Amino acid sequence: MNVLLKRNIKLYFRDKMNLFFSLLAIFIIIALYALFLGNVWGSEEIRSLPGADVLKYSWLTAGILAVATATTSMGAFAVIVDDRAKKINKGFYASPVKRSHITGAYILSAFAIGVIMTLITATVLGIYIVAIGGELLAPISCIKVLGLILLSSLSSTAMVCFSVSLIKSYGTFSTISTISGTLIGFLTGIYLPIGTLPETVQTIIKLFPPSHAAMLLRQTIMEIPMQRTFEDIPAEHLEEFREMMGIVFRFGNFEVSPLTSIIGLMASALLFYGLSLLNMRKIGR
Image (cartoon, rainbow, N blue to C red; front, side, top):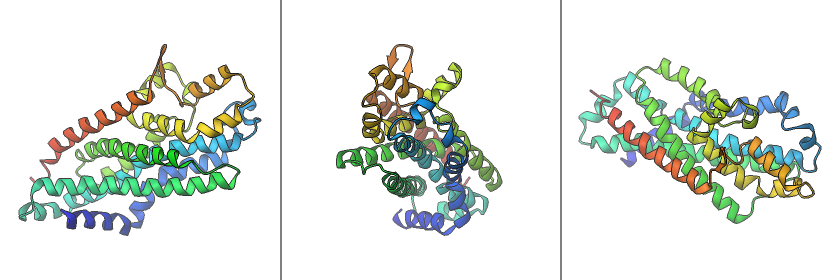
């Protein structure tokens, strides 16, 4: 299993085009904010507050990290589709290696790649935030972010694994991976703040597991920037901002707690891994 795990990881980093496309959604988000959305982020009053830029990019960083866990694991699963298209998987299943070990190597390599690439993304964006006047996260916050990246990667890898288990051609995979990157960005509330969308769309976003990962990351990464930006602002304006920007989720009068989101992410991981394993038993037949 270890040999297959290393093989899958090496194939991902060796394929520069696949590596680029797995990061394409992140590049698109950054480009959109650099060219267009940065000037319309939040209200004019929010943008005029002290530390607004740090607050904006802290919010953006949290969303990008949630997206990265999904898009990079999607890129990592390209090896499954490629192996099926080239019939390489038949050789694996004809070998003495257990089927469960082969499947486990595919899933664990995608999870590992998702974590590695997201941590690299977090480091780069963290350096940028410090460069524009922000501060490094406290050690306890760094531990929280690491834990949330692991949890988000676990959930996102499961969802992506289920999707990929249904794909048989590399062309279909390429199309879906390109579309899904943009769609995930929208459903995590990056392109438009959640509070500006219709109620039906908001509900869909709040039921989408990666959105909860983004919410939890925002609560951690934005904690200090929000305190400083809203220091002299009435508390009700801060609460309005938090709900508008997807830092908290509410269904009517019920506010989703961090524990509820964590349980939801774990439950989605179990559900989609179970469905994926059922489908992946057919690989090689």
